[in-house]
Image (cartoon, rainbow, N blue to C red; front, side, top):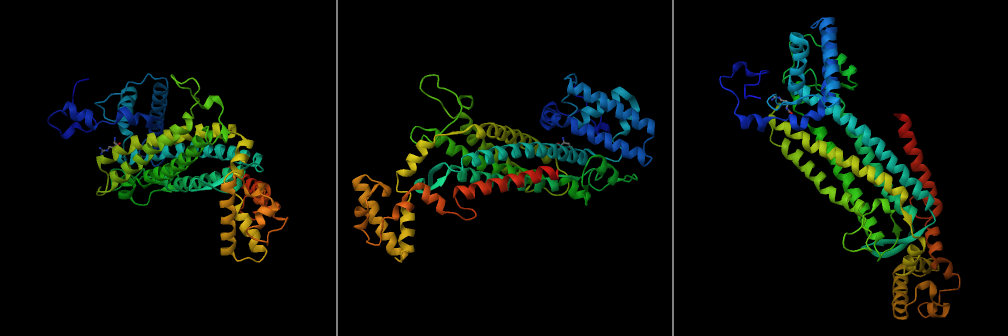
Length: 467
Ligand code: ARG
């Protein structure tokens, strides 16, 4: 195509746009992804214009039919995108005019690309949030299900990655679930501020036509029109909020991934991931690598990057619209795609985790994980906690020398350190006794884990029904 001046705004120009500048300033290579939302917004706009008498019903119908045909062309991959036409908005409008003639040129009455693009992105983000909402629900449901099945499975709990106290695997999974429940709240909270309509702000100050923004808002399913026209065209807080949500979510998925990677190693040997989530090595035939969690961990970086891009994009912009805003799309699109892919990977993978119960139990048995239980036992018998701590420390030192866990020592051996210790001590030194004793809300006792899992499932169900 020749480098003619763009016909949508070329009126006041005396020379054509520089070829490089045209390419540099164009966004159509990436914003064509907003085509569906752009057409949806235009149909609502035309409908409203007809309702207030700015367009005739015939004009409205011609516009809607034309746009509907264009939607088909785009879906079938027949639409010819033009870089000289700059962006998705002008590509679609030019095609409409080509199809229906002069009436196509009336569509842009009372609107600007500034309020148009802000509306398109919000519609896109609303759809994206709704898909993420479903995928996050699916992941949480699978996680809660696994937690319920593994409510009695004992594993070592860690602090500083050193064996600390025994916990149940179900309890560990429900800790993950809590992280995701908070992410879910953040997502839905963001949606409230996404679902506000900029359309009608026009370029920055509003428009002289007798538009009815409540009509357009209702047609598009927005909660309300944005209050202030200057803010409406310039605000990208919702994009920053979304990428903040996404960054925190990916941080959580990355932590979970890290644990999955550790647990599948021969050194931990806590779980097996089905072969379909792993890949082999081209040189080492014995290898089965946890690629999916590793990749999720790796993808966290790009999402943090998008958050930084958007924060920096906005930090020095004066009101109202600036071309800088065109840079909001690629980070947002990639953040959405990455979040959806990572959630899908996790939602498919988590219910398929196969815990190696014997191996987890064995690991909990090593590492004196019931030392705190012994100290608590002594305290119950009247020993001060600090003295109890000292007594147990000496017992552990003895165990390390003799290569014996506390539960494997004889009563005589234990009595060397305190004659308060009686035969009933073995009830607390077992792993089962240790976890069962933490029997309060939020504790790791299997009964508590089962109760917590059913509460979590109820909350999730309530959310789904509220939709
Ligand atoms: N492609 C532009 C964007 O993404 C659309 C709005 C352009 N507005 C303008 N006044 N140049 O932000």
